[in-house]
Image (tube, rainbow, N blue to C red):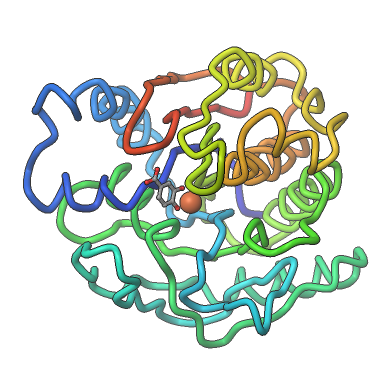
Length: 281
Ligand code: DHB
Ligand code: FE
């Protein structure tokens, strides 16, 4: 059976794509953010995952307000990036893992998560940037199963539901008939608000407690309703739901996790950024 080796999380701000494109990683503004990655890349080069399941939120590229699935799973052989209006370069397509996609879809539906199945799926910065950040070299060495969670149009799924989705994904990965090594990724957060009266809102105290909880008390954030999370983390801070799904997946693979590395830096653009790697033990 496939092996679930650990989980990764990172923020996914479009400006990061520009910084990579322009080679600004060592500029004073960017360095404290990019400095979070080398220890995690080192861990990845030791562990060598073959496949990643990526929890991310589409921002209006593949799904728009007229059709908004709560949960959607990619089942494509290849995923294309497209111009999404942030002025960032469009990245080359990356490869899917169709067999795991269908195993995930079958398992999730069986467990009463009524996911939308996408045999074609454009992916935005939330899906492409984590791959560029964790594997900055030329070709992406992992295949990908994107799992999209709606954090864009209300009603959003609850924190508890996203954690449960993650658990079901974790069980599916470990029952996949394959000898491949799989990692789960969370893309998004932490606290940020891009619009309205509270634009620029950041909540460092909450973010740090959330990061800590992922190692020591993973269900801590599931006590909060989505509205409470918006209050505490901002309208886009609810992207932390991806991190809960990622952590839910790991909860099915081991009793605890080891924090390989984490980094927290404020701000990049309007966002409190975090990066983290957790290993199943
Ligand atoms: C920003 C953050 C996001 O999560 C996003 O999807 C787009 C922009 C920002 O801070 O600029
Ligand atoms: Fe976002």
